[in-house]
Every structure is written in C-alpha cells, then in structure tokens.
Image (cartoon, rainbow, N blue to C red; front, side, top):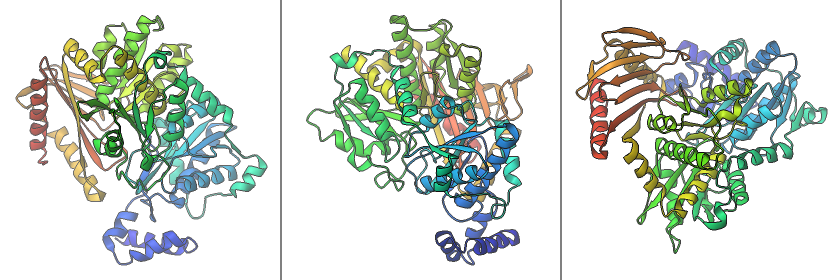
Length: 574
C-alpha cells in the first residue's frame, strides 16, 4: 500500500489547481481500498486504446492519464513518420469533448497537425476521415456502450482501423516513458487553431461519408412502394443526426425518434446501460411504439458512439430483440441473395467475421462461393483484411463484415463497424421483406429451416476491481491446465489456445493457429457444438460464447443450457 499511498499524496499535490479531481482525492483520504483501486496500476493502453471509470487516479480516465497517453502517441508518431496528421473526434459522454480538446492541444504542441470535429460524430465517421484525409492516426473519445461513469480513448492507425497489437505495443512503450505531470507538452486550443496546427474537419468530408453510406444500398427504390414504420433511439449518443439524415435521404418518412433519448447526454438518464445488445435499451422505444395506433414493424437503436446497432421486430403485440448473430445471418442472406439477383455481387466475394460469430453465416456464404475469413474478436482485424484487399486493388471484393457483438460493415471506405450504414441496411431489408409479406422473424425462420438451427449465446460474468481481475485470471488458468475432456456429455475433439497459437487435436497432436495471439480458449465438441472463453479487453468481464447445433430448435436450446451448466459447474460459477 506504500506505493499507492505515495502516488495518492503526489496527486493531491499536483492536482491542486484542478478543483474537481483534487476534491475527489480529499474525499477518499484514509480509504485504503479506494486509494488502492485508483492507484494500483496505470489505466491500460492496448489495441482497444483506453477505457475506464472517470475520476482521479492513475487507474482512471482524466486529463492527466489522457495527457500521458497522447504525449506517448505523439512520440511514437514522430518516430514513425516524418509528417503527421491526426483526426480527433468525440461522442456524448461525460468529459468527451474535454478529453478530445486536451489531446488536440498536446498533439499541436508537439508540432502534429490535428483535424478536429466541431461536434460529436459516430466512430465510423472518424475511421472514414482518417482514410479520406490521409491521416497517420486517429483518436475518438468514447467508451462505446459502457455505463455513464466510463469513458475511453480509441486510437486508429493510418489505414483507418484501430491499432494492431504491434502498433499499440510500440505506442505503449512510449507512454511508459512519460511523466504525466512533467513531460506533457501543451498549447492553447484557440492559439493552435489560429496558427493552423488545428483545423476543423470540412463539411465536405462528412458529406462524402454520407454519400458512400448511401452507395451501399441494394434495393434503392424500395421506399417508393413500401413505407415501413420505424422507431429509432440514438440512446443519447452521436447517432441521432447521422442515422436520421441517412434514413431521410433513403426516403423513409414514417420514423419516430424517442424524445427522452434524442439529444446527447452522457448521463444516459433513461438508460443506465446504453447497450443495444440488451432489451432494456429498447424500453423507451417500446413505450413510444405502443402509443401508436398501428404498431411499428421495426425498432432500431445505436450505442453512444454509433458503431453498434441493435434491432427489435414486432411479433404479435410485443417486440423480439434480434441478437447480433441473428442480425448477421439476416444481413448475409439479404446481401447475397439480392446482390446476386441484381447482378451486383462481385466475383470472388469476401465476407469477414469474428470467429466467435455464428457459423451459420459461413454456410450461407458458401452457397454463393464467397471467401470467408474468420478473425479474432475486434473489428480492427476485419479492417485489416479490407486494407489488405485494397492494397491489392481488390477492395470491391469485400461484401460485408460482421461480429456477434452487434457490429456490421458494408462497403470498404470505413474500416470499423458502422451503425449508420447498418441502420440503413436494416431498414431497407425490413422494407424489402415487408413487400413480400414477411417480417424479419419470418425470414430468419426460413434460413434456419434451410441450414439447421444454430443457437448462439454469449454469457458474460462481471468481476470488478483488482480482486475480480485475479478471479478471471484464475479461471483461464484452470481451463488451460485442467481442461475437461467433455462438456455436457459430448467429447472435446480439439482445443484451441490462441495465447499459444496452437490447436490441440485429441489423439493427433498440435497444429499452428495462424492468427495473432490472444487470451482465448476454444473447445470444439464432437457434435459440432463449441464453447469459446475469453476475458473482455475493455470491461471487467469474462465472456463465454456457446454454439449449439441441431435440426430442431428445442434440441438446440436444450443443448445450449447443458453446455452452460457444464462449464459453469467446472468453474464454480453461479
């Protein structure tokens, strides 16, 4: 505790002119547990950048930790490139604009040109701008769908996707050299604006982003004949302006927006967990929908930085949430069938997905002779493949990217998941099938009847703080060293350890996994079912991905429950 107490005392001294942070520190005087949690480590920088609770301390998001990271980034960029330009954006979260301006001031003080957004924008707009404006890096201040007490710092490379492991490691090495109270250079924002070191992003760039989204439309005239009824919630985030503008340009007129969640508000007053993966995020949208004389067919939600999109579909008098896997299946089926019919599907099409995303998408893609790439979790790996295709002059082969955590991408101008284009495609797809007298649930049932019933479930267990991190580490160690030979009565036929880049096939030996190393374990069972386990890179969680396959829906559901029970009993989890 001596180290943590020394850091606490140092921060008390150094934050004397920052009333908010200094007051926080004084309020935890002699609270050893709180002091330890705030100072036992530095907030970690990785391929997802930073993410943590807002507040005072080395393990918190504040202007000093943001400052140290930005100075480290500046040092890295100056070593890598002779000239630098960095785009900086922010979402609606508490202190997002403050942290973004802080980062801009530091980069400018280091002689690095900054393109700064005048107002909050979705994450995919930042990704697009990095590419379109030939930037060497990009930053967006966001904690995605986390609760309001969190904020974060995503860092992008010159290709417009989040930093790879190697780039993040080199940046982190520079960050570790920075004394956050002594080494951080800084200038005034307005002074840098006057000198030209900071410039605002041009409206033309944003307009070009919107136009490339519109270019992804497949059934361009669908709203001339079918006026779908939609309720949209931006969950008090950055999607409001962009999603509504795109849907307006596509011709959708029958759209209602949830008033309590329309304007940017980092407190998220009507949705404490603004995550479109959970039905609670649709509570206000459902309330609004049920005030209508005719219930709307579709509800859509985007998270605070508008890179994730969720949907709920009318079924009788209620709404059914479509999972990330199910949405990916619907998108893949719609894109391949309609682009084939319209003769716009490229030769040798490419679909990219995370390896924890349902294999049902692979089955659909195979029917259209598409090349499927399965990557580690993290949309940067999908972005990396798009960039590789572009380098070969084959970017147009990319059809779509998807991951089970509600991330989707169409088109190759953006290199990150994009809720704006996903919302457009979702509404267009629903309108197309409505014209045929089908809901998205009807189409999903048709797909399952054709290809088998894949039940894909993600179950997360949360363990906060230092003790929680130790528990997660212990669980992964137990699975590595004492792995069961079967789950729910089904033999394990191979185990993939992505940290060691090895796939151990029972009775046959090891094969190499040609993917970047990651703390992930995968258990493939004899009946095509599987379990994947990984600690979250951005939240204090351990995630379990279950796949259960059968030709009957009820059998698949039962199989999932048995798999869940089996591994949780092994790990002594409730």
